[in-house]
Length: 147
Image: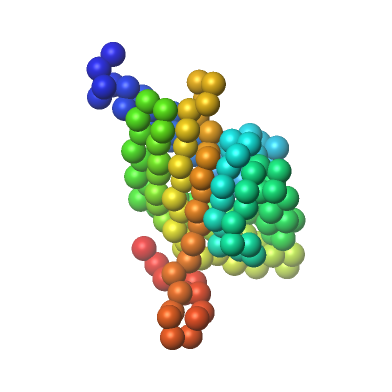
């Protein structure tokens, strides 16, 4: 198998992982969501903490996020994937948020970068980073930006 074929195959596997992750998150399936993460994941989410170390800690955060919204909303825009034999990363813009208890949708575009490692033959998320740009003068997040 040529290196180009391996790369294309790895990128397709990462895209399938992203599709599966997206389905798990938007359906509120915590177990399926967490199945995508390595036990030693390091996550920089845009909400609450500076960092989350380990899937047990990140699971508690995801559980809080999923209970905050009656329906999670995520939509990828302009995904780029780069993959080798056992390490890969992707980045995109991600429209994320959800519906609150009153049914009002609260979403904004965020930046998402994800690192993957092939562990025992399966791709797992080992690093995840969500962020929102902010205004330096006011210190306020810029939630109204569009791609």
